[in-house]
Image (cartoon, rainbow, N blue to C red; front, side, top):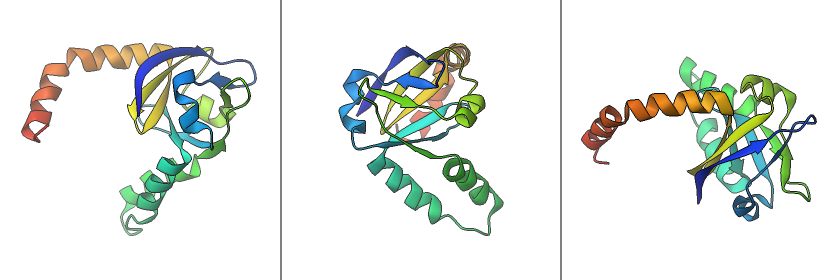
Length: 143
């Protein structure tokens, strides 16, 4: 399970160190793709396979289904950890997420999210200020 928030640098070659506690879960490979809110999603291969199967089963006749599948699948790239525990984030994904020098890696149960540090701070402040309303809505769903 991925949890926690970690700050790491991205070098000039687009390499991003993965927190050491997550490296074993990604040792057999991973997939990085466009995420939501201009973040990137990094999935272990097994979790990616589950999501890709669900995306492939979405109805082709619905434009929202096609758009979301395209966002996730066409933007995906296989990545492997190097000996220092880093992955190379492709240029097109770094541009999508506006990743420059400093990134936040957030553990979210079955995936990691990779954020530009400044965007993460803005997003986090907004969510924290809306936390009571969000909790109330989730309470109505039984959470």
